[in-house]
Length: 251
Ligand SMILES: O=C[C@H](O)COP(=O)(O)O
Image (cartoon, rainbow, N blue to C red; front, side, top):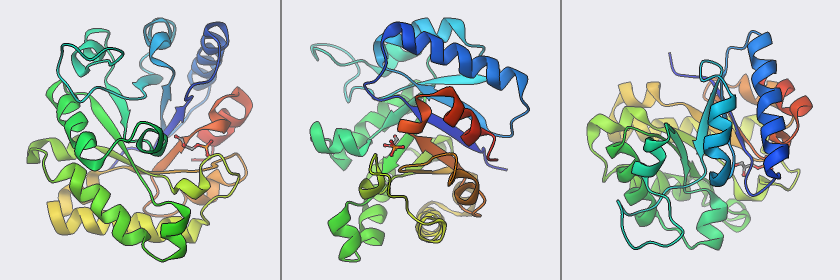
């Protein structure tokens, strides 16, 4: 059975003190409550190690928000998969729409980042999703299919079972607009079918596909109850313990 996951992407938010406090609160909540979901938090990279030290890895995993396309060398500001591995980070978000938009990331650079992560046995959370114009012109199936295939086709087959996919329609991120459970299920099923057609049934069935885009305590339960939605990648609502814990409890 594939993992059910609730991942909090903190993006570029929280002071160091606030980040430590929130991590500690989430750790306490998860340790005191039975949860079916695997819980991941993704703070800014400068906080990764400190947060790693205060949370218990049997309850919470820590993810980086990005990784370099390169293995090592003259890439000022980048962080390599090897460096993440050297501080014990085993998960990383890749290809978030904000990075595609503001850092001009492409499917090609994202495929290289996946290769770097796989080389260090770090689990990628690959983000895909269409923008509003693509949705309104009914291109969303085509867009997510090409994002999935462009990222995954260059990978070694044995690594494909290690990936998590997050479907995040750009029009639903931070906007308060959520894809309806039916809209989200429809495209999640399509993503799984795409995996099935290209990489086989075993990989399709083993891949956790998360939904992201204005997930909150009121909509999480219905979204997560859809057969092809295996959890959420949560932005805004992961920044406070009340909302995030209710979302985790929605499974
Ligand atoms: O990575 C998280 C997504 O971008 C969703 O963010 P949001 O929950 O604030 O809409």
